[in-house]
Structure formats: C-alpha cells, structure tokens
Amino acid sequence: MFETLHSAVRFRRFRFGRATRQLDRAANVMDLRAIAKRRLPGGVFDYIDGAAEDERSLARSMTAFADIEFKPRVLRDVSEIDTTTTLLGEPMAFPFIAAPTGFTRIAHSEGELAVARAAGRAGIPFTLSTLSTRSIEEVAAVNPGRNWFQVYVWKDRGLVEEMVRRAGAAGFDTIVPTVDLATFGRRERDVRRGFELPPKIGLDTVIDGIRHPSWTWDFLTGGPIRFANVAASYGSGKRDGTDAINLAAYANEQLDPSLSWDDIEWFRSIWNGPIMVKGVQSVADARIAADLGIEAIAISNHGGRQLEGSPPPIELIAPVRDAIGDACDLICDGGIRRGADIVKALALGADATMGGRAHFFGLGAAGERGVELAFGFLHDEFRRAMALNGLRSVSEITPDVVSPPRNRTD
Image (cartoon, rainbow, N blue to C red; front, side):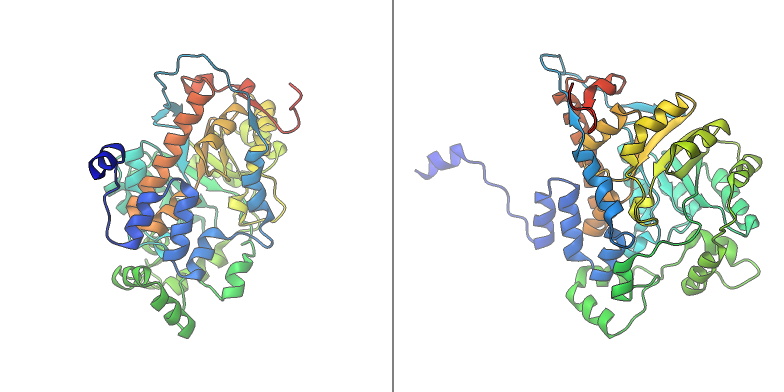
C-alpha cells in the first residue's frame, strides 16, 4: 500500500523554520505582504502598507483594476510569448519598473541594494529615491542594469543639482522629478502608532522588537540608518551628514510649495538624459508635460500616501493617452498587485507600469529573496495573462483586449 501511495503522491521536502516554509508557500505579492506583516513590527509594517487619511485612494487604486474585464481571444498559437518591451529607448524584460521607496532599510538592512540587485536580474529599471538609505554610488556598484534617480525639487537647488550630477556620473540613465509633494500627506496609521523616521526607541519599541526577533536582530546588526543621498551632500560644511534626525527635519523644511513647471524645465540645464515626471494626476497637466517635451509621464497618486481623494492612476491612462497621443511614454504608477494588472494598464494606453509596495512587501518578508519572488510573481502572472488572452507579444496588447468599466456592452 505504501509503495502505491508513494508512486501516486509526491511529498514536499520538509523545510525547517516557519518563515522558510511560509515563503516556500507564497503564491503572489499579497502572500508576501502577509509574511511581512508577521515579520515586521506593527509601526514598520504600517509605514509600508499605509496611506493618507482614510486610505480610500489606496484602496481604489487597486479595486479599479478589478473593474476592468478582459475580452480573451482563443485558439491562437501562444506556444511562444515575448514579454519584452522598450521604454525610453531601452529594452526591459517586462513592462514594470521598481518605484522609489523612502527609508527602505527600515524593512531589511540591505534596503535598496537588495531591490536594485533583484531588479537588475529581473531585467527591469530600478528607481532610487532621494530619501533612500543607500547612496547613488552604492546602488551603481551592485546593479549594472538600468538605474533611475527620483528627485524632489527642494528649496536648496544647489543640493538638488549636486545629487543629479552624482547620478549622471554614476551611470544612472533617467531622472524622475516627483511633483506631488508640496507638503507631506497625513498618514494616520503612523500618527496613531506614534511612528517616526528614524524610529525612536521607547518601551513600546522594545516590546514590539521582542515580538519580532528576526527584524530586530537585522535592525540592530545592520548599522545605522541614514538618508544616504542627502547625507553625502548635506554633510559638506554643515554637520557630519550621519544624523538621520537632523536630515529628516532638513528634508521636511526643504519641501517647496512654490514649485512650478519652470522648475521642471530647469532640469534640462543640469541633465542631458531622459526625464520622467512622476505625480501627474490630470489630463491638463499631462498636456503641459507633453508640450514641454518631457520624455515620460508617470500617472501617480504617490501610492495613495499624499492626497486622499486623488484618482486611481489606471482610470487616467486612457484619457491621458487620448490627449497626448504618442508625444511621450506613459507609465501607470500605483495599484499593481498582479501581472494581469500590467496587461490591463497597457491595453488602456500605458507603455509600462510602476510600483513600490510589491518589492517593499518582499523585502520586509525575506530580504532580497522576497524581492526576487515579488518581481518573479508579477512577471509570471503577466506572461500567463498574455497567454490566456491569446497575446504573443506586448505589441498585441491593444485597447480591444479589455472592456473598461464604463464600456461593457460590447
């Protein structure tokens, strides 16, 4: 009987360690989110997972994808599927960009280095935040692939210019001015927990750390966390550049509510490569960006972390594409949790998609391995969704692939 059972059933090799077993069984990005929620202290997880005020914009950014249905074609030869595409004149393995995330080492000590390495192996661009915890030069050293630099237009234009020039010297090929941060949004999960960056150590922090030993050990042995890009410039002639508390206050003071389109044009004087404006949330602003000759526009509501009530990016893709035509590349940034979401965004007119929480969940769950899984899940799901829709290449992802929510009669 046992021989018969053994021949009919393949038993999974037992893996020691609860975390390892959980990771082995993870099937998608949201499974990585669940693992990260268990591994990370509550305040850290909420910093990654949370959004502004009632978090409706975050929720709608995801549910808006569910309102879009496919119109699959069958009996097509999909034995060979090509997921590659070109963005800003350069190839990528599939149409997804690793978005910038601030203070990334709060999830794992490797931080942006882990994400950059995984993105390079996945064949997709990695975007480094101005408020990253690893420097431009450190990222360039570990990722020979495409690196982009996200930049805020601060009051101290000299500091901004220095960081942009450092990015160019390190081989970064695109800069990403982010334009939706005239002030910080109010993230109420952080308020309720009293969570600040960098975290302050109190009794509640100690208790939470005891309950999450894996994260705590990594945090305590990973070295001090700082805003590495700002520190490299800010420390010159001021402080030693390592005080994250001083730098956090400095960054907050540097937000410039007088930011205008003239500042976007200013980047042309200090940067010779492509520019992608991130944070556009209206057709009118998309037209302005296109008229200025911007190479790419990211329709983005900052992951729902800024303005509560901002539109889901996916709902703006079609009207923006209609308005600007082929004037520039168009990216849908936000709400991507499945590879099928990428197909939907491209069908509505995007050239690529962008997201940060997917890899942040992976990093929080298992460091670099978790990030690899996140990118792998999205790529595999993208390929599968193409096959099930009868699509053999990215060029075949056209508007007739989907029925938008307001056009389901066809």
